[in-house]
Image 1 (tube, rainbow, N blue to C red):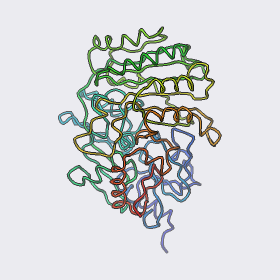
Image 2 (cartoon, rainbow, N blue to C red; image 1 turned 90 degrees about the vertical axis):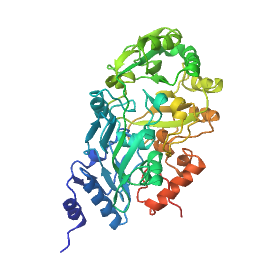
Image 3 (cartoon, helix red, strand yellow; image 1 turned 135 degrees about the vertical axis):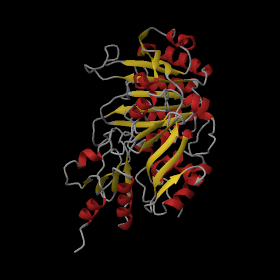
Image 4 (cartoon, one colour; image 1 turned 120 degrees about the vertical axis):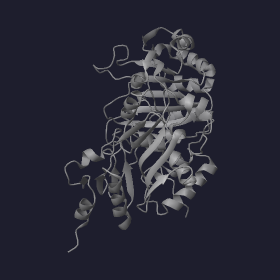
Length: 460
């Protein structure tokens, strides 16, 4: 008698298998942003490449779609009951090569582990703000480093090789020389082309940063925002920064100067001496009375202290857009919608300066485009977990007004669940890049097995 599908699947993988009735199913499907709920047909907790291949073949043989969940920190698209979900959080091997200045990571590795291990040999990766974010998902979207992005570009620009299991169950070792089209598509095309099981990328000989945050009262928002605009207009490429309007909740663990108030914070990271950094940051410190100042010379390993991102899951509605400039109209829109006295429900508005090396095409082409954008903006609104239909448009008024300074363009690093429509995804790519991505999708996933993502459909 043939084995039932559940027994067959369990016998073919070494990692755990969860069906909806199993203990641990909900935890395995959980994500950081709790506005999204996953209810797949089955979850395979992959521990190896062989597990990933077995899961893909199981889905292929039954004509089921496959969804991939690396660490659960990134923007997810809800996965329904027909799908096979593969989680990779158990694949956590990191190999640092100090001589070659590279890191090789498996699909479940988070940035905190790479930052820590690279720092031991005086090297640094193009990591994001949170040590909990998964390396692979972050990099496949482009990867915007809060510390070194303007100096070195996107994390995707420095990937050397990728291991990926495609829809036919084959493991492919992809380099620019072995498969130029698939390499191009994976970096910027996100999870559309298979399950990335490992990647290797370059590290940089950076041990220290002049970095931290300056915090101001929301009452000084106008002066601080205009000072930031002037600051960014002359900032060197070695300086990466952002400005944040934050309405913190009235909770005991929030610092007194933030608790239940609007604050405006400027985060900076400079790859230079403390003396030069102090000179660069001086106009910001003079913009208004500073409530708290954490900007100092710090080890790169303390990167996460720049932003102190939340560490516990929560529910939030997010909307993103790119700006060609921080124009007077854009600044007025931010102040009108999210400034003091606005009465907005938006929890946070963030502007990150791009330009510098973000605007330079890499030596090996990839699908991370929109390199002429000057800023990336997003609005985040904390909401109760579960049904967010009543709150799904929070922040859109601001994004719509900011869209006049960038044509409403998106970026693969800044796509939220709200951007999962075909039109929303297309806004992240220029026409030629999108056509090239569709051609790669048609070649490697013609039946759109990997479709529960910011999907790029194959050609008909």
